[in-house]
Length: 199
Image (cartoon, rainbow, N blue to C red; front, top):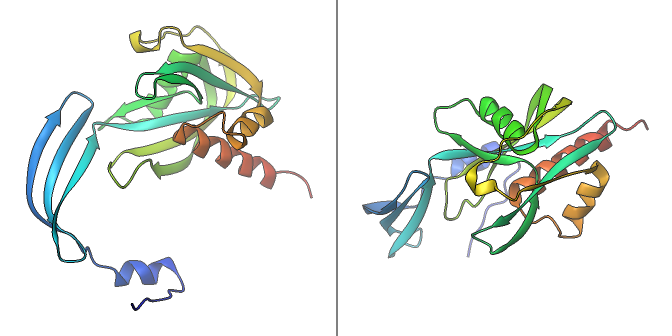
């Protein structure tokens, strides 16, 4: 078996061609939020096979809300898909074609009642790229003002927790927080705060 050792990502991207061939595609399922397509393919080994792809009709947006005392906000809800309770950063869906910042501002307000003066996109990610094209974006929101929340029907019973950011970070480290967008956002902000510490 041969392999290459590349010195940088540009060399890899220039070298690698798409090794997959799509023979046919069948729409299996569609609803207002997701689409499932099954592809008949020739895989990178040259063999026939199938591949299922879940396409999302929203981008995922998450918000790490950080106040002047370095407290942040988590929301807790019972997740149908996992059949368990989950603590997460405020997050939701941004319909394709809608400004993701607008959607993040809406989600923060709906779930926590917070508005923010300062917004910064801090991370993009693909949340499960072996089966889905879902893209996630995390924003840092600062300059917070508390108002009233307005939960959607699926969010009834949602709880909001304000806590020191380092405690939220510890919840990621000890596995209490398992939601991928929350882990990505909290670790990203933890790195930013570490880099801003005086030497």
